[in-house]
Length: 184
Image (tube, rainbow, N blue to C red; front, side, top):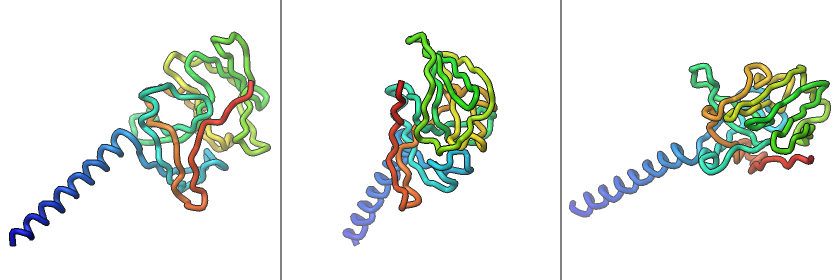
């Protein structure tokens, strides 16, 4: 009988450690996210299951081209997935289907080449946005069907959850993601 209780206590300890580990990892390191909608097609499809890295932005700032998950700032628990186009302090200009960014430290306007977009994608709307010191300009890859910074303005850094790092589902498209390199 004593062996039975010792075994039961060991099982309880293992279960407690497992639950505690999962809690810590999910709360502070990685969070699952399911893509809902078509705003990131063709790179992310409706139903894709992603792992979101929540730790990186505690050590460095977000970079242009990273795909981020963030909480929409309307008081609801709605999460979005978009790509970072403009960084804090920059001026983003959209005109004639072209995105240009004025880089404050380099003093010039740089067109953004976007190799991750499908050919024929149109970036509609002529507008200019000046980003504050903690704001980002984000857009979906499927520009015609994306509710993004063109609609509601810059994204506050406080709303960022993390970077989309790994697509786990569907298994046929298992992928680890890195930010694209932009040519200047």
